[in-house]
Length: 379
Ligand SMILES: *Cc1c(COP(=O)(O)O)cnc(C)c1O
Image 1: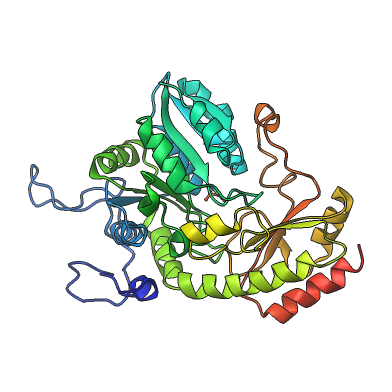
Image 2: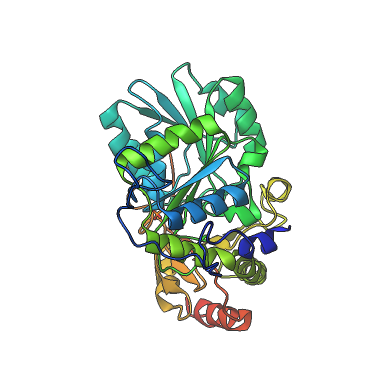
């Protein structure tokens, strides 16, 4: 079956004698045991829940992984993955990371003695040279957020594996419809399920999908031990959102292509960062390793004041953090999602204050273009 079919045809309620079309919400904390010393498939929802199991199995299938795990947020997913490491271990990460990830890496991991080294993963040779015997994980996003640089995931998998370290890819900006890092050699894929997976800005969720069973056992241990799993109702919402992933992303990408080419020639726009633009330095790589360029556009305005004025005057693009919703949004990453970047990490990364990030929704493109046209003439 092809991807769009698999989004709606899967075992929605394994073992349920009523054969519901939609996965029931098993809103229960505990499950009755037959005897004191025999356990059924479920005993306690922190350890396992049928609604969560359906979501996790579907995510594993869509990403092509051995197993998936659902968490209460994308950050909970990332945090759990970092607990694979112990004191003295290092993470080598690309410097362009989601702001919350930077904060976790800079201000939380050090408490457990895990060091994070940042480098430029666009320069594979230099990046590989930063791997040390202590490096236990290479951590990247592609396309990066918010600068939308494209990283060579197969190349990174090779240098990571040559040095006996894991490659972990945060693929939130793409979703499994557009990019499947495990097939490119990654060991771990992370998603903020709050973004494209659910797609409606109505649920916070995170996911980890792993390539191999040995890693799955470790992740399951952590998910159960730390109690970070996603609650049944939230699992239901992500499962519902996932069914329209292809429809939404096709529509969002169509709008994004139109808007990016409009902005590219607009005299008030200094530059457009969009991996679907043939002039983008990562264009060829993006189309080799992914099935599309996504629905995010970053653009630079002539000044920080112009960026702020445009963000605040657009009517259909709501000012909001996050991305991937059916509703278009605009953000100023330097002041919003990436304001949490720790000072020591700011030295290594520059997010221009004149940078706006647009997340394109499913509205009629004419309305989005008219809104941009009207407000751009005023700045
Ligand atoms: C939003 C986001 C996260 C964090 O996810 P939450 O669901 O907000 O906790 C992680 N990585 C990327 C790339 C994101 O955009």
